[in-house]
Amino acid sequence: MAFSSMIFLCLFLPLFLLIYWRAGTIERRNRVLLAFSLIFYVFGGVGYLILLLIMTAVVWRIGLLIGEFKEEGDGRSAGMCLAAGTAICLAVLGVFKYTGFFVSTFTLGKAAFSIALPLGISFYTFKLISYMADVRAGKCEAESNYANLLLYTSLFHQVSEGPIARYPEMKSQFARRKMTLVSFSNGIWRFSVGLAKKVILADHCGDLAEAFFPAASAGNHTVLAVWLGSAFYMMQIYLDFSAYTDMALGLGRMIGFRYPENFNYPYIAASVRDFWRRWHITLSSFFRDYVYFPLGGSRCSVGRCAMNLLIVWALTGLWHGASWNFVLWGLYYFVFIFIEHMRKERGAQPLPAVLGHVLTLLCVYFSWVLFRFTDFSQLGAALGGFIGIGGSGIAGKETVLLLRNNIFFTIYAALACTPFFVQAGKWVSTAITRRRGSHRCVYFLKAAAVAALLIISIMAMTSSSYTPFLYNQF
Image (cartoon, rainbow, N blue to C red; front, side, top):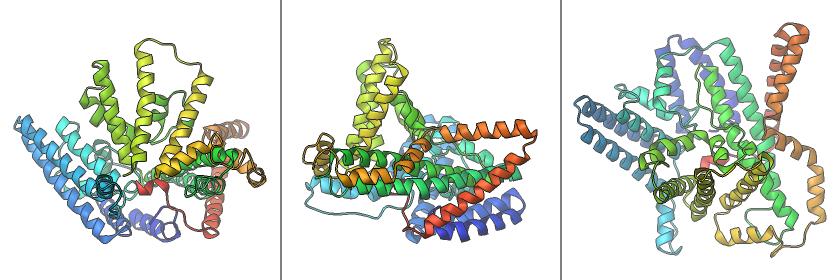
């Protein structure tokens, strides 16, 4: 089940909100939330739900052991428990996500082997690891109630694609939160924006990316088609993933939760480092806090710092997918991050803002080409297509006509990747409030906008085939 499916919108979500509202106390509401989270996960497979229950139970018990050893002052045993728990979680993730990758690698592609990937396993595995690490570091106490940890792991708002929330910030909200009219209305607004972003913008960007430059046939395309197809894929992957995050945060706000932001308009970044402070923020902070800093961070020799960054970015690439192109994608970013780090260490002046922004966009643009093609022969053909190698000319009539027919959509989608509409909304809201002397008109317009977005989104969903979120596969 996905947030952008009719069964979720028309059945699951209304039923959940109705029962949740009538539950009354926070304890009962937590039980309702847990029950619906497990039902949500059942749609991904009963067997995988059992796996999630077992992994959570194992980590719950290890967390209690870590807490007991810390109370006794036995830091060594607590550290060993953390290492064992992390190894177990990574082993399970490795079996399901990387078995086929290693089999094909060591047999040189002669043996084909794959296992279906459980829903959200990459995300909830990292949540469980962060919980154990936070208990070990004293950032939170070991959870004595298994149901609370299970709710943290399986929460249907986050289980598919994050954000990777930390347990200390979630535990306090499990115990104390308020479902108010203001939070509910803000949540519906954020959810509606995310839904429209997904089914209206991201999905059509994906259609155009395939129309201009199909991933399955990288050769024999015009140069313009290659550049445009890659640009639409670049917009699609941001709009799709940030749409899921908008919907997840909106679902949380409806019932009083506040989840960490996962995106901050990454395509306006002025450097590659800045891009990764804005893109998939909770994943970046996970690797920073639980891998990079423990390795020594940047407060060490240049060679050691380079090794630390190399490990982090190789893991970042591998986390995204069991294929060598994802490893290459991670190493690609390592090169640029390390160059920027060395420039900063040597006191070099920052690049002019416009130049830095353009170079960052180009770097990110080509990174998504590496990300898109898992087959290296297709990747090579795609890279050659940017300069006309193996292609069919500079521009064709079909390419130009397709772009012309979608020019206004292209402009709108590009602006949606920036803060333009948010800032315009704030300007309009401020102007109306000053003129009318009241917020009522703004509230009315916002409610009308929510209704319009939901209606248009549902119309788009019923008139086209279902397109899953891109990050479901990771």
